[in-house]
Image (cartoon, rainbow, N blue to C red):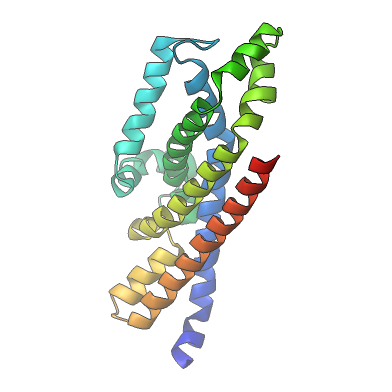
Length: 219
């Protein structure tokens, strides 16, 4: 109990750093991932902005990012992180590589969700004279809303795991605490506490995401 109380300040700091990393990258995955996923969908064959070259180029870039293990991607992006953020250490710096991974991951999930929308609905909207932007806003996004939310939930959960890996290179957070205290100092109780925190965080994200997606599905 005494060891837990002594560790509490570090634990609270680490938890806040994890929330920072996940929160920043989660927000950017929405702001950039959704438009990128829509772009992948509408530039595909048979859609109103069909462009084979741009679709292939953007798809290739996303596949390269997604196929690179996060730890390797983090290290590869360190020089760019230094230029953009001014440091490679801390949760803000780690948020850059997390955001890159999250955007690519969620953009592909957005594309998959949009592909599940009935093409007949799109054709009907086109026949009524709807513009591409109206189709995206009034047809595609509302019809795919439940899938978009579930994809966002999966992205958020993945980010929790990635944020733990960011501790390896000084990103901070719960993962960093587990490595410094639980692994290097052989303090098993610290390792258990950090794992429990991550499990609780994942369960919260999953529960909230499922609840919102279910409500969206019933509308």
